[in-house]
Length: 277
Ligand SMILES: N[C@@H](CCC[C@H](N)C(=O)O)C(=O)O
Image (cartoon, rainbow, N blue to C red; front, side, top):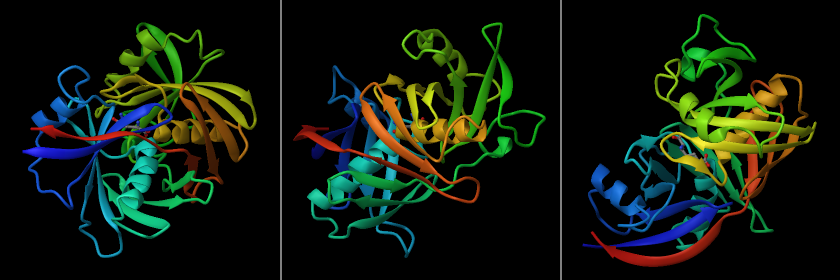
C-alpha cells in the first residue's frame, strides 16, 4: 500500500510521523526498520505514530519506535513534533493536547510564538523504577564501572531511562566510546540513554546524548529533562535552565520532587510524501 508520512525534526532529532487514524496499516517491526533506514527507506531517529486514544480523558495515543523497530516509552522532541502534526493536519483544534504514551500521559501546548511546551510529567528517581539495578533505593549520584573506569551517574526516568554523567567539556567528552558502553551497561536491564552534561552556569548546560538504539542524536528532549533534573538534584542548577544541544536550545523547568518537568522548544516540518510499503 501507499503510506502517507511527514518528515519532521525537533532540533535535528528527526522523525517520520504517520497518522494511523485516517489511514489503516498493520505496522510491524520490519516496517519501522525500513521506514527509519536512511538508505533503503525514508530515514529518521524515531518513528512516531498518531493513533486514537484508549483512555477517555486524552486526545491521542502517541506511539514511539526507535529505528531498530523497538517501541519505547517517551520522546520529548517527538512530542513537540506530534503537537505540530496533529494541529497542521487538523486532527484537533485544541491548543492543549493530552496524549497517552507508553511512559504515561503528557500534555502538549502549542504556544503563540510557535514553540511547543510539553508537560513531561514527574521524573522517576527510584532506582528500581528507572530501572537501574543497585542496592540503594534512591540516590543523587551512583558509581558504576564503565570500561574499567569508575563513572558517576545520575539515574532518571522520564518515562524512558536516562543515565546522566557530568563532563568538563562536551566537545571533548568520549561520547563515542562511553555512550555505547553505558547504553548497554548490565545495571540498566532495559538499556539506557546516556547523557553527557557540561554545567555552564546555574541556568545553562551543554548536553550530548547517546540515545538507546539510535546512537548520538543532535538533540534528545527527554535527555535534556533528565539532565536538568539530575543537575538540580546534585545542587548544581536552578529551576529554569537553557540546555544547549548540538541541534539547538531547549528550555527546561523543574520545581523539584512532586512537580512535572516542563520542556519548551521548536518543532519543524521537513517534507511530506508517500511510500510504497
Ligand atoms: N529522541 C528522544 C528519545 C527517543 C527514545 C530513546 N532513544 C529511548 O530509547 O528511550 C527524545 O527527544 O526524548
